Length: 300
View 1 (cartoon, rainbow, N blue to C red):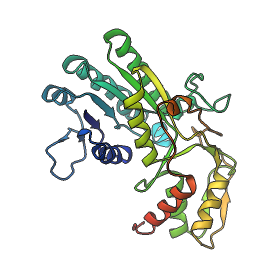
View 2 (tube, rainbow, N blue to C red):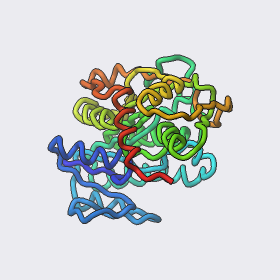
View 3 (cartoon, rainbow, N blue to C red):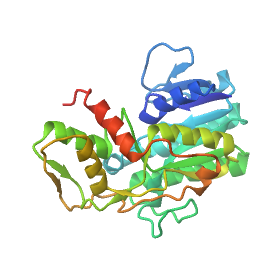
């Protein structure tokens, strides 16, 4: 099966390229960031990426869009640019598929941010979408674009709603924040109360989940939660960190609710499980791996 990954230099895209290649997919990739010479890699223009040429030169079975901005705070500060990356680019990719490669199935990386602060937990794909950030709204818009191209032009599409991704190589978000403060600061200051919860999923399991979706989904403008269906509070995560990284730093929660951040998340992953997904890396093992990785990184 021939696959094109757009945004192959990012955290999820780069890991997915390796994972699918090892699973015997024929993997092509592209990004605005240049990497080592690879006959199956295309460097895209940062200002005006030419998606049409991708689908004119090759006929793909699957296109996975891993590109875009992935920061809620950034979306408040740079709302227009976040829209361009997370919504408008999706139109451009899908229109190129429609014209040059209409048989190609399309997976777009959406986010649990589309749910906002869900009224009911665990949150299923049928829950009302109530985003609380520009990032969340732009992901909702992208999902509607996928529905448009499926209904009007029969382009087979699927939105994957990823919850709290983590793993070696990710230099942002909560685990990186804690690690950096252990190494560089006198105290570990964190947002919130510590009772906020997330549904974490390791990058290896995200790749496994996408593989399951490729093989099992109908691509009828579907939406699939990618998570583990397990809730862990920030306090519990800090405890796991402290067990595996001995330090003498105090952890202080400021009690401030950061704009755009939900209070509690846990996903219903009934659909994903029906495709054969099973968690392979526990949060405890994943954090151990992350700590071992971060200790070898030079942080400033």
